[in-house]
Amino acid sequence: MKKKALFSLFLLLSLLMVGCGSPFNVKQLGKADIDFVADSHRKAVEEGLYDMMVKLYQRNPRELQKQLEPTIDAQVNRLKASLANGAPLLIDGREGVELLNHAFNEYYEGDRVFTLVGGLLSMIHKSYGYHTEFFLFDKLDEQKLYNSARNIEIFSWRLRTETDTRGELLLLSTELNGPEINLSFERLVAKLISMQDMMALIAADQNRRTVNSVAHSVAQAVFVPL
Image (cartoon, rainbow, N blue to C red; front, top):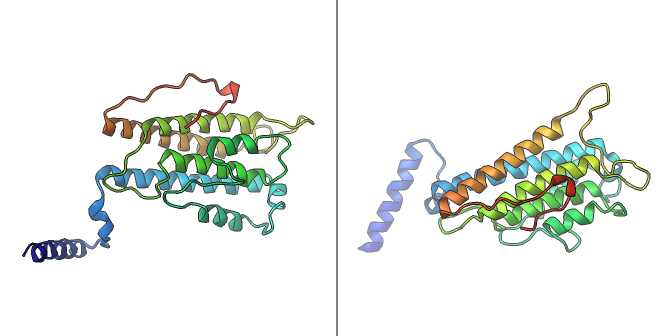
């Protein structure tokens, strides 16, 4: 009888979802409100990073030529395919902050755009506990989310200031001195930071904890461990 009652309840929920005109997915039964919020934020940050990759390749086409398949779409799809639920995103055997430091080395000879954006995505993936989707018993770590936002700030500063031995920027991004001022990178970075900070506050509220502010200086260019 219990099985029959459960089946009837499941069927009723299914019919209600269909009647409301919304596509029904059984996985939604295992989600709380915060899980939908986390899914939305994580996806938005991920899409923002793909946008950043496109912008950086457009400004630094020489980096794309270091790839076997030198098209922007191919590299974006390659990065998307590297995400796996429950597993770190590794590039050259590194992830997150370690990968960012590796790519900012002035002697790095690989595709700096792919490795830097991959490092950011790897760090974001870690800040969400390596989840690509959230369910009832998944927990967010507010400190990792907060630290990731600080690292995006540091990334932005280093991207705009770090040079090679000839004094040339490692990568071109924001354009302030040309005929047209391009602040699209700044707007995108600000959006990514605000989304991670907001998710950190939501997670802290859910966990009934406070976020520990990190004493750091962007000018020191030292990434915060997650």
